[in-house]
Length: 493
Ligand code: UDP
Image (tube, rainbow, N blue to C red; front, side):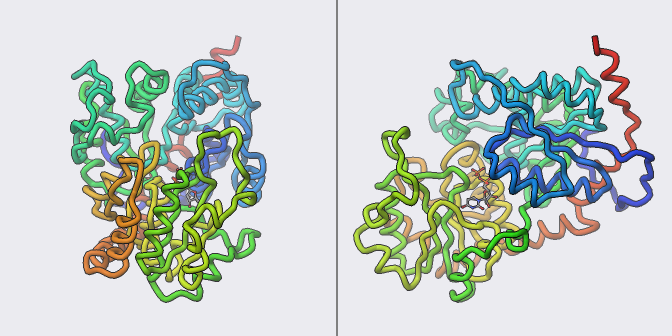
């Protein structure tokens, strides 16, 4: 099957009567908020469709976070595999460590799957090595990818590119790389951990397209209407020449629910936003890990000040030369972090929040008129669902690609120039922030983002394209006659 699961009839969850509730196991890496949030939302949708869901984590990660997530999502089961011992050498990047962790947990995952006997196994990108365990146990195995469809199209096409050259992407500098359904991509915009063909990270990354192609399906947190060219390129087989094309299920955008109402106090920044005019505040937030050096923080502050615009800025501990001797956030001297007097001079129209703000709720607040984002895919989906236009300032992972697709494909963002030169100058920050809030160009961007929001919300309607794809998928699993116990029994020695 090579088409998006998009039936003309609208299936519902009613009428799929199987005696035993079917179990779906989702295998995810621990401690990666950007992967766990959408995974949990996906799991909840499956439960609403009449499935049982266990999220298996390859280790505990942050125990407090996990406790919070468990408490907020009682309809899901969570199972943490024992944290494995990792070889002390070898992993050359954060990504390689996460791949390694998921791989090292496979014996425990195998035991768990044998006893749980799920109707389907769904694995995260970083847990791709579990594909072989699913195949070994005869469990239909799918991928749930927390990035955009365009990045998936690129990943699927990677083996075809590898056949054309022996060069590493790093050797190509800013030369353009071409893949079906996508705008040309400067090679230096590809994720850092894929650039060097001889590195362990790149080798691990390059195995994944083969596992994707042989999987039962790829589930993506985006919707067809936002990325039609990439979807068409994938389902028509253009991205997978000479290889099987897996079914594609675009079921998004899935974003976190409101934080208020799940036992948390309303954050002070939301009260501050209550007092600001409609669509007047620029929100700056750079994901769960985005950090800057002190000079960049000073340039941002100076730019925000001269812009004259209202702002809400989430600031993390700065990057310093010595990562082993970091001050905790509450030990930081804020007056030294920012230009002298900045906090005092901007106190009437700006708020700085250290470390973390409830981003999903901030973006949904009517006072927010723009978002300076690192282009993490969850952040993008949250902005689209709130109709907030974006200024793109990519930092790590696949974010430069996301920026390109947002700016040149979907036209939902404008880039902050200088992101690729290690320094965005104060003048650029001031000019772009002003442009976004005050100019006709900024208003047009806002209108386009509102149109995208309507399209995305339609996709999630009862009869929308994403709901239809999800219901179709859930129905397959509910009706599966696959007996994983029997399949597992064959190989128990
Ligand atoms: N987030 C948040 N407050 C913050 C920073 C991040 O709530 O101060 C949330 C954000 O809403 C999103 C997730 O953390 O759901 C970040 O995911 P994304 O994919 O955007 O970036 P990543 O952290 O994976 O780089």
